[in-house]
Length: 431
Ligand code: XMP
Image 1: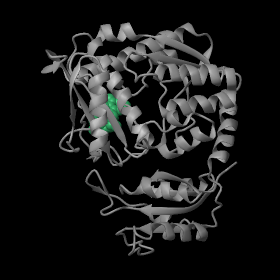
Image 2: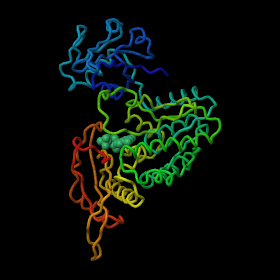
Image 3: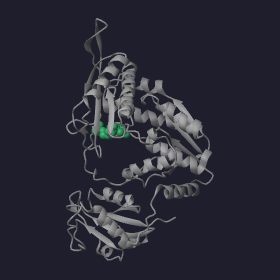
Image 4: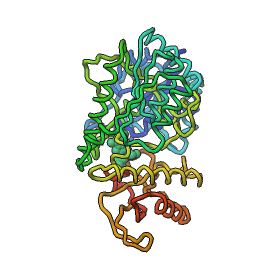
């Protein structure tokens, strides 16, 4: 089914993704396109019903003033021009953004756009498209157990069943119970072809003695690709590789000029000689839509609504050179923290919370004797876009409960600290 669509022309505003999400929240599909799209191409986009031109403050990208072409302004489609300082200004929006919803829904009425964007239609369309693209060929998916890859797996299972093979690599840096959950949900409950690879020793051996965070990330990323590639070569007749790419990954989100703070590792970048074609069924979805899709496909709530988890996993929370002993302290304390958050209804309210274990010990007393053990640092932050973050003001009794449970249940830890540092100046992760 061709959805009616509102096109947002990107003239450098950081608000574009928010407008697209607002329009989709009103039930109409919306996509963002570059400002230099031609009028013909624009008019021929499938389902296009109207155009929003949004330049933000200055209509400048990388120091160069930009605008859409005169033909685009005169292409005959209903047009809403926002915050835009050009001679073509069609409409002044004094109340933007306070009146955003009203302005947008009036504009949708003006365009006569059908409100048919919902997950049911999306899933039905994607099943159709995936079947068309894949035919009777086989598809491979790296299933980390994160939200995106899990939703891709569930969608592909619906569409092509056992033409899909999932590979789950346990690199030993997962949270407690995660690998088991992946096997349970996908192999046992959903009947997927799932190859489970226990690569724990292999990763930990590679990481032994490596203390530089960027080096650790690179090793984890490279080793992941190597293991996955080895598994892929063992499988016969695979044509497609499925990936959990989502819309924010492909929309330029104003980060073009941002300096690299940390190199973020995510699965990708397989060697070219494997020659896979890509299947990316979520590439037009925002994160909240991916979750809604997961729910509609019947995935467990805690898998779909889990907090963000970095690609290198607990590896960047076991500071410095990773040891099995400290990794276990991170894993156990993280599990306790998650349990307590759940009990207190904080799950889903706090954006990200986890524990960190540094590579030094401090003196304590345990059972009337001197102890020399590791501290555990608790971190709980809120953010909209992970670029800045504030600290969750946890109630004192909750902090007390976290402290006493970690101190009594986690072997090798004699101190618990709460990290009070916002981002900036700190980052969310410690490494
Ligand atoms: P920072 O520490 O940069 O983190 O403030 C911002 C968000 O990104 C996550 N993060 C990562 N995610 N690979 C990822 O996929 C990584 O290497 C990585 N490092 C940080 C972090 O958990 C937070 O949500």
